Amino acid sequence: MSVNRELSLYIHFPFCVRKCRYCDFLSGPAEESARGAYLAALEREISLVPEALRTRPVDTVFFGGGTPSLMGQGDLEQLMERLRSVFDIEDQAEISMEVNPGTADLAKLRAFRQCGINRLSIGVQSFHEEELALLGRIHSAEDALRIFHEAREAGFGNLNLDLMSALPGQTFEKWEENLLTACRLRPEHISAYSLIIEEGTPFAEMDLPPLPDEETDRRMYHETGRILETFGLRRYEISNYAREGFACRHNCGYWTGHDYLGLGLGAASCTGNLRYTCVRSLKDYLEAGSWEAFHEEETHLSLEDEMEEFMFLGLRMTKGVRTGAFAERFGRSFASVYGEVSQKHLAQGLLAEEGDRLFLTEKGLDLANYVMSDYILTGASD
Image 1: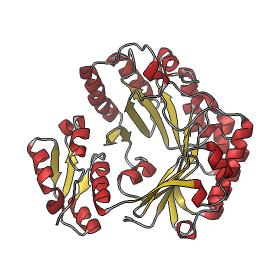
Image 2: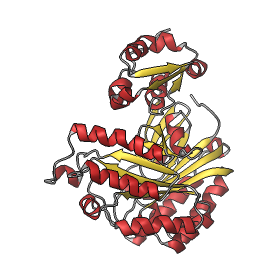
Image 3: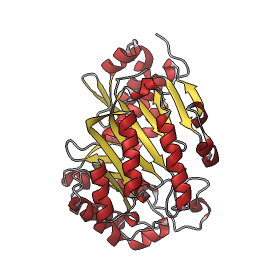
Image 4: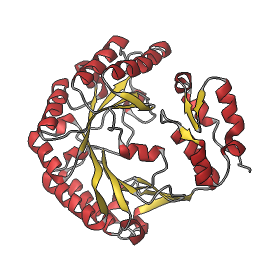
């Protein structure tokens, strides 16, 4: 069930210089020839987008990966030209690109800005050399500082820094230093994530220093909000903080039911109640010659699926969900579907309400997964 007519685009560039030790994304190193073949297939996929999606105004575009900043100016110019020829990209669209500090310089950043990129998400992760080495990052702390200042010089007025906490061997003091170093740069946005060690990654097999204990992890999370707020960066989602007017519009779309189209290897889409994914095999992707051949795992979301997502995605936002918006969208009163579970969490102090707005408390943020899991339906009734 579509919330509005506007559409977000996600473009996946699956290549990187070297895969980080914690990364379980669909990405990896490749020769320049493979990158060229991939970009040709990506343009072919874009050219096959159905007319019903082409005619919708696009309000955000996000280049993720992998490391999309590996693209050269000519490749990005050609790709942007293709996107603009197929889609109705709004003049004020937010167009973001993930940047690894080890893959860009001032000239490349100026070229990206000239191509229409107006927001950069810089994958810093840490300003401590030993932490960067442990993570397997290709850049240094000096590279991260340099790329931030060069991005400003290139004309970018909307910059995000990615930081990662709860690293093996990380103390609270080191995490605090990372935060303060980032804040003194005065970015518009900071994404502060806690490390999750995923199966199948090198980290899962390595003999690592001990992770911070639960108490230190919680302290890192709570102090992150306090420290960032003193620098004018306020939490608007569980792991994201921004200055007024600089919340990431693309990511907010995911959490609020905005339709999105993913293009590129393994990219996910959700338009109306239809969810589908691009093929994950590079060979299959390069050989695909029709819209259908590019895609797999098609699912039609039920009404119950959509109501669940409205809740557990919407509750990620600090402003929470509006019960009135729930009724408008689904034609059912909020109380008839989720009244009982909501009252339980209100009584436990995990949720709070203001008017028709329901949102996680500070205590609820600590137990967010527990709260959100309670909004999975086994069957909704009027």
